[in-house]
Length: 353
Image (cartoon, rainbow, N blue to C red; front, side):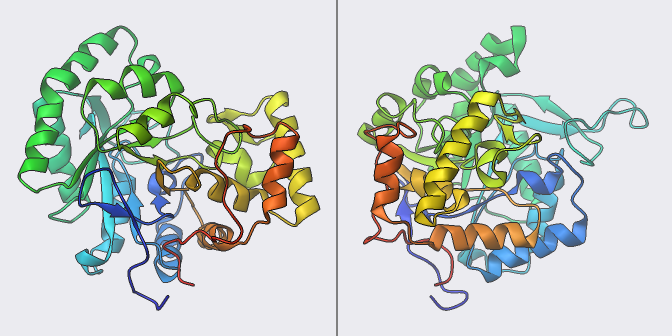
């Protein structure tokens, strides 16, 4: 593929939105785990663009606005017709009551703004309008309801869920009817939400942060099957399972955004051993595996350094022998029914060939 040309894409549900198989999740640019210097963030985005990345996903929450600022400041000089940009609603930002003592956690150097949960019509519209300005654009391709998992909201969960289903969703439907966005999505972190929250409103696509990876296919026969049946596109938002499938096992390896348990570490070692026997890297398998499912339209791994996004592009293009997947199934390391890539039908990505 020539530099700058648009790659093969996959349609998102019944919408006009099409996504490439490989995108970029911009959470790290907001300071996930560590502060990312501005020059490094820009170099990372530039490495992705040069490699053919044309789909960028961010959120107000990432670095309390920092990720959107950095993504927007890079893309401002690109032709808006040449890329897809998505962000999220459910939080808007405001000045903290005491900026001098404000705690920016969990972000390693995010902006000094407070995130306010609001899933109402007005909250979604406020979030959307703020994002337009931070991203320096007049068009966002899709908006996703962000982090409406029960565990994140305590005794406010039922109220916020009601706000979303009776009020907030109307804002997204209105924006879609007007052509301001092309698709409505929802970001989901836990398997249960795929069945008991995502079913409450009409969605075009879902970003799954953890429930379907090389390490876990528990939603294969229920949540993913329903998405396929109802023509709801799926984007896998954490194909590296928040870290361990990129780094491999080790004392600091993360799974589900915390240090990985001994059981998970052992499973990854066994997957690695199969890969070593076939010359397959853990990263290549982790990125290519989810996209083999017919409901999945894209994966959006994060990166905080130019080398990381370049490695993601190369890993997505690597040829993996069919025997590798067979051995994983024979050893019970992936579900026997899980669709897997075929070596003869190499995955087409948004990276330059």
